[in-house]
Amino acid sequence: MSDGPQRGGTPEEPLPVRVVSQKIGEWIARLGWVWVDGQVAQITRRPGTQTVFLTLRDPSADLSLTVTAHRDVLDSGTPGLSEGARIVAHARPDFFPGRGSLSLRADEVRQVGIGELLARLEKLKRQLAAEGLFDPARKRRPPFLPRRIGLITGRASAAERDVLTNARRRWPAVEFRVVAVAVQGATAVPQIVDALAVLDRDPEVDVIIVARGGGSVEDLLPFSDEALCRAVFASRTPVISAIGHETDTPLLDFVADLRASTPTDAAKRAVPDLGEELALIATARSRLTRAVLHRLDREQQRLDALCSRPVLAAPTTLVDRHVEAVAALRARSRLVLSHRLDRAASELQHTVARLRSLSPLSILERGYAVVRRAADGAVLRSPDDAPVGEELRIRVAEGELTAKVVQP
Image (cartoon, rainbow, N blue to C red; front, side, top):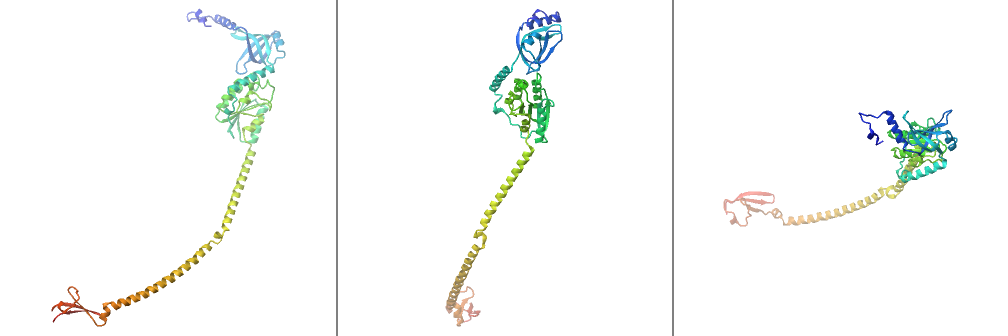
């Protein structure tokens, strides 16, 4: 509509609503015939009219369009068409100015067969794998004991009952935040993606389980949707996929952090078994007790072996032997010391005797005396050494006398 404003439409000369509607219709008509792919959300067959109204929804987004087709076109191309089926329609857009609504008028409608759906899924699988969405290196291990588990499943479904019952049987204190969604049909993917975003923002949720019971390939198609796979890949919280039965493998199983074969298996993988953990603790405690007792027994045996040795069994034996040696050495030393003392005493007596024989005292004892001057203590050897009046000191055997020279 780039040329619309060029033809008018100013504040002074605005375009009437009918003109704007007419121009919108003209531009939409230029789109021409297109092939459109979608999922049938609703089929309306009005009595007395040959026109059938289809609500065609995008499986990956909350978008829908109304498609009209002649009853013969629908019956010849897709006999027995039901809600939830995937179709491809050849249609052109029609804009109705009176209502301001847009619809598609189809002249050919084809139902997508199971073979074509599987081929599309295989192509999408290769594309997502090439982008790294299935890379095992990016998968996160769910926590051993999550604080709270987010559960995305159908309302009051068997999958919800299996997950809650088995998880609480294994760990009674486990907490859940359950978000009920449509698990098949046109609204399934948008609701699951929204629920995933809500749980991913919850800081209390440590792991998210997406669960659904078994079903046909068409029923499980929402869990192979590209938008859902990318939302799971972008989730910061680990995601466990529990879709269908053992043999069912939607693309969600490949992009999820952990694949469970069934909802019951998802409960087993989400929480540990309390009884098993208690048994493991008891086993570990028993093993630890046995190991400690074995270690104590081994050390006791070592102590017993050490104590049985002579040096520890009779530790005084070695000391007694040395005590005897010390006693012998002491006796010898006393004997040698006594002998030497006796010999030294004898030698001392002889020396004293010799000293006494040479001592001046022994001479004095025979009546001799030693005369010295009192002034300087010099020994007198001649009478001339003592003039008259000199004081003298006379040493005799029993003491000293003082004398004075009165006559030479």
